[in-house]
Length: 440
Image 1 (tube, rainbow, N blue to C red):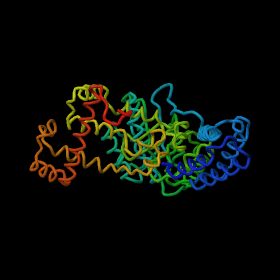
Image 2: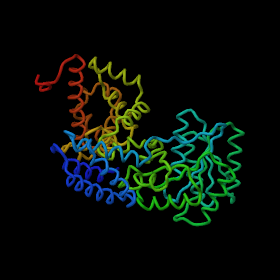
Image 3: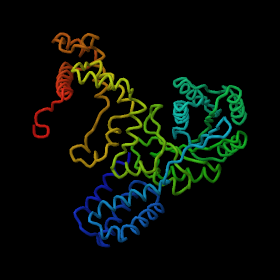
Image 4: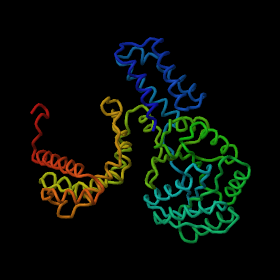
């Protein structure tokens, strides 16, 4: 996400380092590079002009020209202007004063709209709400089936009427069911098309007028770049949506949609999808996204993911075992599973401030399939072997390799690394430090 744009912007800032004072020529050169980087990231031309104009106006002010660290001041200005461009502050999905809250989803086919409905239901279910999903794509039975499967995976009821032809009536009956059963959040999935057409818009407007939603949310595929912005403008003219959800932001998205849609439509981005799994959904924070774009990490989102996915008691038990020198492969496997719940490892590393600026680290490719192999190796061990890995002899290593679909060499490597880690943790737990640390 934003990798190419991030690298290019960091290159611009690096060119400003070491200067005691910036000249107007320095700033003009930096603005040209920033402008080109944004255009290559598929940001709308009017938005690029607006953003670079605001940055230049501030960068040529006294606060930068007289600064001892002008490059840092320019980074600060770019971060603040990016944050403003994307909305300034987080906007939450509106909730009805009297339940149920009704959220009407809109978007083109293939944008990830139905999957997003499931993600949104799971998100609010975790906050203590009781959602109901309503399948109104009566032209595509597969879409109704998909919503039913998603609902089953997260334990959320789905109102679907197989064979129905009137989407408006289905939506009305879905809302009535929510009221009858005490559900306080209704998420209405509507039909999409491969392209915008009058029939789709007309049906969407009729559903909106019939159920009177609290919010209309437009789902956009971030990977389509400027096409997503054009789609947003068309939906805005026809339906007047209230907010945007960007999906597939974890893919090869250049970032243009995220940086453009708020400025073009005036509507806030509410959520972003960061993966295929149903828990891969984040509320959108403009300041945090600006920090990611500039390669400055996103510690707050990383902490929130950890709080949601890492069990506190388990962490305390692990600390006690480390201090006592009794860490086992079962403990290691448990912690690995908890960390993986937080998302792809490469994505988590990108949230660490300064990670991408480290030459040795920014090109590091973390393949989650390697972690799959680690899990497979440990799962192929007996409980006794996991607790006492020193008992794993040559024949057992061959059996574990066969059971996990790996090689004996990979099993040996894992056991060796685990033994080294356990020795290190034991020393730290006793208050010691490994040789070479802090000169010891």
